[in-house]
Image (cartoon, rainbow, N blue to C red; front, side):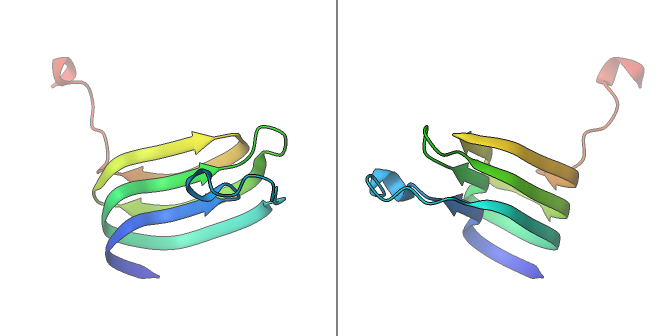
Length: 98
């Protein structure tokens, strides 16, 4: 999938802007693959769970987000796996190596 400009490229939450209180949702086993996003004006990858029930087992593979205000925002989440994920461009060798 190709996205142009979005607010958040990925926003996975059971606690939407602190309005989910009292409605704990079990979010787990999500697999995201082959995604390109030109710009996320807020967050690249946002995952929020509850302290008592964490969002878990979320897999991102082959994801490119060219530009994001905030690359990651993970709260009450565990086992978030990134494979071939780039946010804001690839890092090169340290400048002292060149």
